[in-house]
Length: 325
Ligand code: SF4
Image (cartoon, rainbow, N blue to C red; front, side, top):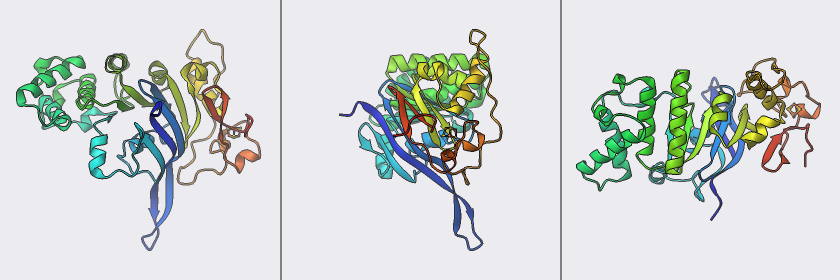
């Protein structure tokens, strides 16, 4: 049995970008372009990057909500890329998604009780109504909601409470992996901390494994054991959180870190300002995709994509500044 709960190898998810005059697809957006990582049980991997870097598509491809173009995704040792719809339904009891905007994902015509009861019936169809009622009330308590509010509708709750309902729904099927996609970015800062603490507590008490996706490095820092930095469809650096924050190697990670460390008065560092915009993923630059914005760019960077190399144990960087194999 592998030590990894999840193994992602060279994952690519491309979308058709345009139709030609004759109706043929004439281009593709490389939303995810060769992503690889592994995840241990009980661990939290944070995926950070700017909007459009492919982090959400990576999460959705792992859950097979989007069909990957190629690559391998092994969950609990089982290759999931070729599973049938029936097999996928079973798989999704083990992997769940927590959305950025729970309101959009909660049926406004169903009471919270019905939403959770429906989710519970996916897990076990053999329970009777009384048993399910007890389980719904238990779930509400687990996420810090008052069971007396079970008969209310989503619009009667605040944003933070709705996110708790979204989390309760994800937990109803007893998953082992939760992919949380920007779960607090729509919430006020004071509420963000409460939801992050709730997720941390649930992780410990239920032995959950998380992929935590966010554009906000401070949030990722709070929650993750390891961090993957994504840029234009690829992971440019991945390591333990402490390694990345003490010494980011990739020029893009250094720029991201400098913005966060600048907010910390105990750390002396200069903010690195990135020039230019993220290139269009339908026409990514050749070679290192970061090269048009990189102040260290060399000739080779413009033509060949750097491989990920291990700069210290468990710390991988894709950049020609470090010795390539
Ligand atoms: Fe910059 Fe070259 Fe490293 Fe890319 S490979 S980050 S362009 S130095």
